[in-house]
Image (tube, rainbow, N blue to C red; front, side, top):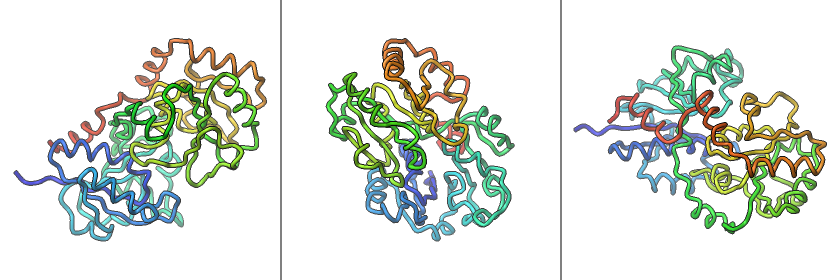
Length: 337
């Protein structure tokens, strides 16, 4: 039987969250995965994390090549995230599939050419993979090229014991994960007041931020992480072992819903939050930035005692997708067995 291949185009380490689950499913089917890499200059650039990328790909028996060599590998589909390197690969004959990431696609899906993009993104791929049809409808990005297969990012087993050991967190601690706001916004709220209240209620404060948004030293809580792990990704792992999440309208609310973790949200962004439709359910308590202590106490006590399973299930059915088999659905669509 002729060997089958998957070709992944990568310039940012963040894409591993979406790619590696497909690689894992491909390995089960004896499919060889190949990665074609090019730097992007950002904090998560593959060139800056080259050794880590090499180690991860070796772990999953994937091969790596410079991006320019993709023209010599025309067997199997080419898989992208958003429009990353998509325009540079317009001439290859491989079928091109692009995976949408959170809500990033909404800003440029239908955007015509500019100084960055030579044309409408979806015109450069054969299909765009969406988490659900609702996302395309809500963000006005419907197209016959869309595939509503879910997001492979969540096809990952998260072992709590391994996560505690990996991040040196005591499994007996009660943990509140603070997904730190953008540096643009953090002074709009008294974060130390939040931390002190969480401590008063017996919670360890874990702070997570992105590499491009380092947190001032006095606001790093009891444990502080940037992108410690690209796969499984740090944010998802820390959500998994936390009792609840303190959010600032980050799109991480989607991860909270799929991992069934409650959250308190403070809206301090200067625009309507992305995924705003996820905030109007019982698993999320929205508080004003000028909150009173008793409001946090009441919110946490509610989130920790209320049975929220039916709320998560309702939202997953209505807006999202079931975790665990998206990568298999993608390969089935490719016709790869």
